[in-house]
Amino acid sequence: MELTGMPNIGKEVSKKLIAVGIDTPEKLISLGSKEAFIRIKTIDDGACFSMLQGLKGAIRGIRWHHLPGTVKADLKEFFDSFK
Image 1 (cartoon, one colour):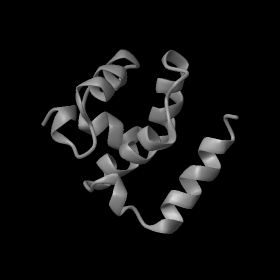
Image 2 (cartoon, rainbow, N blue to C red):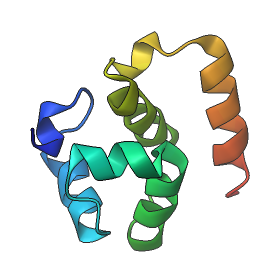
Image 3 (spheres, helix red, strand yellow):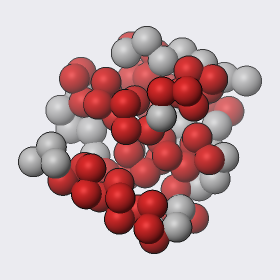
Image 4 (tube, rainbow, N blue to C red):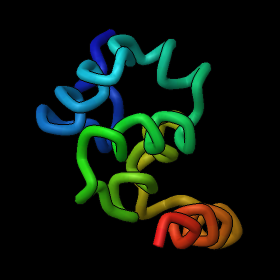
C-alpha cells in the first residue's frame, strides 16, 4: 500500500512525509504520529493540528474526526508545546 492509501493522507501530506524519509505506511506506523509530525515541522513550519490528528488517524486506520477525545486532548497538548 502507498501512503495515499491510508485514511487522511492525501497527495500533499504524502509528499511531505516522503521528503522527511517516511515513504511507506509501515515507516509511518513504526515512527508514530508525533515523530512524523516533528519531522514534517522541520520542513513545513505551517504544519497544523489537523495534520497531526490526520497522521494519528492514518496510523489507526480511521478518519481523524473519529479519534477518541482523550487521544485528541493528548495530541493537542503535544501540538501546543511547539508554540
